[in-house]
Image: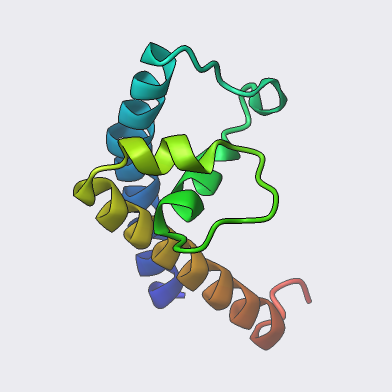
Length: 108
C-alpha cells in the first residue's frame, strides 16, 4: 500500500506538470495557428494522454483523434521528458493497481 501511495504521488506530479507546462503551451501555440480544441473532449481531459503519446511516439499512426503533426511541431525537449514521465507514472500506476486488485481482497 505504501508503494501504491508513492506511485500515486508521482502520478499526481506527472499529471500536474505535463498538463500545466506542456499541454497548455502546445494548445496555446496550436490556437495561434487557428486550430480549435476537439468537441469530443469538453471537460474530460482525455486528450492530455493523447498529446503525451503523440509526443513520445516515433511512428506515424494510421488514425488519430488529435493532430499528431502539429503536436510534434510545437513540442519542446522539455515536453518530451514530461510526456515520458507522465506515461511512465501512469503505466506504473496501472500495473500496481492491477497487482493490488488481484493480490488483495479488501472487500471481504
